[in-house]
Image (cartoon, rainbow, N blue to C red; front, side, top):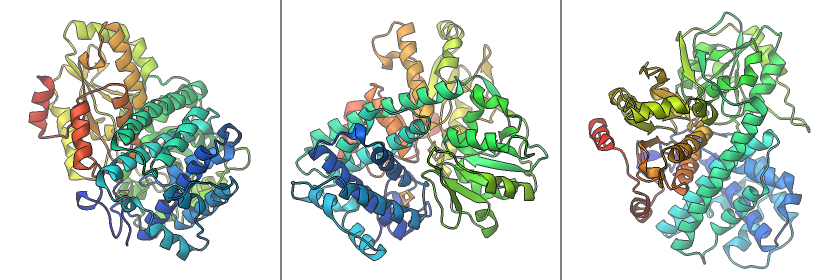
Length: 542
Ligand code: SF4
Ligand code: SF3
C-alpha cells in the first residue's frame, strides 16, 4: 500500500493524496508520520492502562506534543528528523513498562522497527486506512487532527513556561481511544466534543502565556513596505523564536520582517522596543514561493506552513526550528535552557541584499479580546443604533485553491453596515482591501493568529452578556470559516463545544468526514458548506 493522507483541505481529488501530497509531502515522509502517530497511540495506551503520573513526565509530555506537531500539514518534510523522532518516542515508550491488553493497542505499545525499511513496512499497516469502517475512521481522524491543533498551541504555551497537565492527560486518553475498537460511534462523537472543550483550554492557555509575557495586543498599523538594510524574514507562529531573534539582531544592522502568520506579533507591546522590527513582508503562506525570492535574505520557519522551495538558491536561505523541518535546510535546535543560537542566520543576512519592495503602506490589526473590550461602548452603541447590523467571523486559514477567491469577493460584497472579525492567515484574502470603518471602527478587525480565534469566542461570550442574551446564537454574528489544516479543525471543534451553530465551512468541507459524520454535524450543529457569494450573503443577512 502506498501513502494515504486526507488531513487537509487541499487533498488530491477531494478524497486523499495517494502517491505524493499536494503539499509536497512524499510517500516516505507520509508513512513515517503515520508510524510516529502510531507510536504515540502505544505510549498513550501504556499511560492510560498503567495510570502513569504524567505530571512526573514533563519531557515525555513535551515530546508527544512535538511529535503531533511534526505531523501537521506543511510543518515538517524532513524524513530524517521524523525517523529520529520515532526512535526517540519508541525509547520513551519502552521505558514505560509493559501492557497487558491484547490487540491493536498492545501492538502499538510493543512493536519493534529499528531500521528505515522496517519502519516503512510497519507504517503500511497502521496508517489512516487501517481503520476499515469509514465512520469510525472519520471520527478517529477528526479527533487526531483536533489533537494536532491542540498540540501546536500547547507547545507554544509551553515554550513560554505555561503548562496544563489536564490537557496532556486528555491527549493521552484521546490518542489511546482512537485505537480502541470497543468504542461506539456515540462514544467517539462524545470524545470529539471533548476534544473541542480541551481545544478551548489550550487556546486559553496560550492566550494567557502570550499576554502575560508580551502584553495585550493593541491597535497597530504595520508597515508593509521595506527599509534599506539587510534583513531576516520570520514565519510561523512561535513568538518565543521571534523574541530571541529580535534580541540577537539588535545592533547588528539586520532588520527583521514577519511573514504570514507572524504578522500579529507586531500587535504586542513587548516587541515595540526593537527598532529593527521593520514590518510585515508579503502575504499568506502559499505566496512564499515568489515572496521569498524577492525578499533576498534568510528565512526562519518557526512552524508551518512551509512550501517546498523551488530553487536551490532559496532553499539555502531557509532555516527551520522547533517542530518544523525541511531536508537540506539548516535546523536550529535549542540548548538545555531553550536558548537558540541564530548567529548563522544573522551572518548570512549580512552578506545578502536588502528585500525588494513589493508593497507599500500599512495594515491595521491588534483587535484581540482586551482591545475590543476597551472599545465595547463604541461597538455596543453602533449595534444599538443599527450602524453595525451584523458581524462576520471569517477566521481560519488561507490556501492556494482558486475557490478561495470566494472570501475576497465575499468581503468586498458584504454590506457596508457589517464588520468582519478575523484571525489566522485567512485574513490575507481581504485585509488589504480598505473596506473602511463604521464610526471609527474598522470593518476588518484582526484578532491575530489562528490560535487567537479564541479571542473571537471570548468577544462573542462577552457580547452575549452585555446584550443579556441566553444563547450565543442570538447575537448578530455569522460564522463563515475558511479552513486548510488541523489548527483550523481544533478552532472549529472549539466553536462547536461553545455552542455556536450554523457555521459555514469552506471552501470545501473536510474530505475526512464520512457522509454519516457530515449528517451528524448538520443535524446537531447546522454546519454547512459555502455556495455562491451572492446567495450566501443573502442567506446570512436574512
Ligand atoms: Fe495531501 Fe494535505 Fe496530506 Fe499534504 S497534508 S498529503 S496535501 S492531504
Ligand atoms: Fe495559516 Fe498554515 Fe492555517 Fe495559522 S499558516 S492559519 S494555514
